[in-house]
Length: 58
Image 1 (cartoon, rainbow, N blue to C red):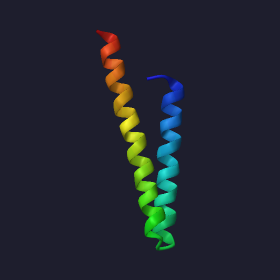
Image 2 (image 1 turned 30 degrees about the vertical axis):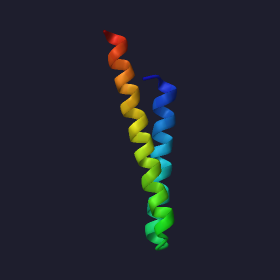
Image 3 (image 1 turned 180 degrees about the vertical axis):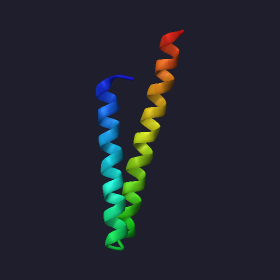
Image 4 (image 1 turned 135 degrees about the vertical axis):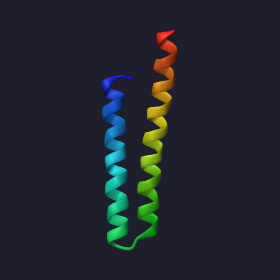
């Protein structure tokens, strides 16, 4: 996984955490759900990158 991908995924994860926290603080379920979705997307991207890296090593 390239450094750019790691930074991009980390930024998306942090943004999701911020949205989730803001949603909880303001009792905005939609914003909270959007934050959780962003975090999940970042996790899936990380997993995909790790799988690609595993196949590159072989």
